[in-house]
Each structure stands twice: as structure tokens, then as C-alpha cells.
Length: 180
Image (cartoon, rainbow, N blue to C red; front, top):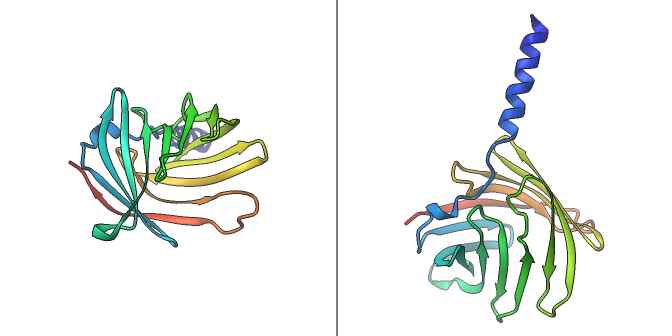
């Protein structure tokens, strides 16, 4: 009998781990705002709207009236980033997308502003309440992290470490979500 309960518990835990990690960006109307903070300060994400099937967000360093424009990004319907635009207009593309919300091993090409094509592999696992990932490039491990999400897949908190040299995890926490 214990073996049956143990097996059922494992099946239940496995089904929890396979939770949907997509960011349901279509539930955020134009003007919706997400503010995340880390030790360096706040980043404010404001949904500008859509361009065809893509969802466009502007990012500001800081929050409130003193926030400064930092750039923009575009995602597909499940929150995978397809393009980033720096404040100076430099465009980085991810073909077919950056695999932010794709479970398992996902290969993509990062097309840098200078035209350099860098192959990348992102391995993402659904965990209870969120996801964890590792991303590899030409120099091996480039970044790793974990993100906890709400029912719509919007980030709540987590951590990220950008490469093997960065020993310290950069912790982030959502401080505001205002939907329109």
C-alpha cells in the first residue's frame, strides 16, 4: 500500500512540474505595467501594444516620472522574446525566438546588432510555481536562473547569474503589476 501511495505522489509531483510556463501576454492590454526590482534598481516594463502577432514592451530604468527609457522588446504570444531594441536603436534578433518559455532543449540563433550570428541552446524545466533554465553559447554556459510566475505566467521573483565568472546570483522581485 505504501508503494502505491509513493507512486501516486511521484505522479502528482511530476504533473505539477509540467505546469504551463507560458507568459500570457495577450492578457496584458496596452498600458499595462510590470515593475521588477533587483540590487541595481527597478526596471519598469510597459506594454505598448501589438505589431501583428507580436507583443511590444518598452523598458525604463527606474520607476515613476524619473524613469529613463532603456529599450524595447517584442515577444510572441507565449512570451518568447524575438527581438530587443536598445535605447540607441541597436537591434538584436532571436531566430526563431529566445526560448524563454519553451520547456526542454531549444536551439536558437542570436543575431547581434553587428550581424554576427551566434548559435545558442536554452534548456528550460518547469518547476513547481515557475521555471528554471540554463543558456549556452559559443563560450559554454552564458546564463542560468529561476523564475517564479503567477497564474498568467508573469514573473513574480527569481534569480539570474550571467556567466561562470559571476559568482553572485542577481535576485529579482516583482513590486508592481498593473493590468489594463
